[in-house]
Length: 223
Ligand code: DC
Image 1 (cartoon, rainbow, N blue to C red):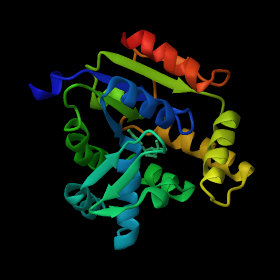
Image 2: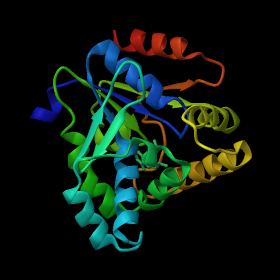
Image 3: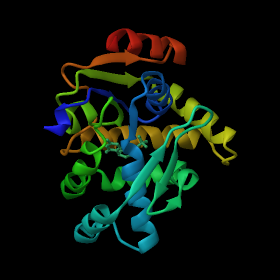
């Protein structure tokens, strides 16, 4: 089966734990493909908003998911560029609003099922770094490498604040913290593929670790 051909590093964890930064560094170091599964949920929520599809209209959401074409370009100098149905939407998808909208449609089992094969198709030689909430538990349960990154909500909010600020967004730290905490509760308490470490995942609390330290630990695991 093609799915078992290539190795996968499943990188899961809550919002702001560093999955995106660490995942992109690892994908460049290994020369592996990179899947930003959060961008898929954000992209679908963004498409739904643009098309006036409400988050309880499951039939229309599934049909949008089936027709969505998402391309993610990773480069060494910046964060990944996301293209949906031919439009570059990187900045629109990075906003806190897009994250909340994504978290709103993510509990719907039909939506998750519709997005599953798109994610699994990303598993190609020589390997895949897959970043998300359920990479190690649901999407790639047989991944040979699983890491669950976490950090305190305060530190994650501060990181997200610095990231968005550097990109020129007008952000408020207290509101970001509230939003991250609300998203943690929603993502962990849903029935369909909740945010939780796979039983065989290495759990890394990155609160006190630098990016280099986290990357080194992952390199040790994969090598
Ligand atoms: O990683 P992120 O912040 O871009 O994800 C946005 C939301 O999408 C997140 O709050 C929950 C949802 N999501 C998910 O349910 N499963 C994934 N594998 C990735 C994201």
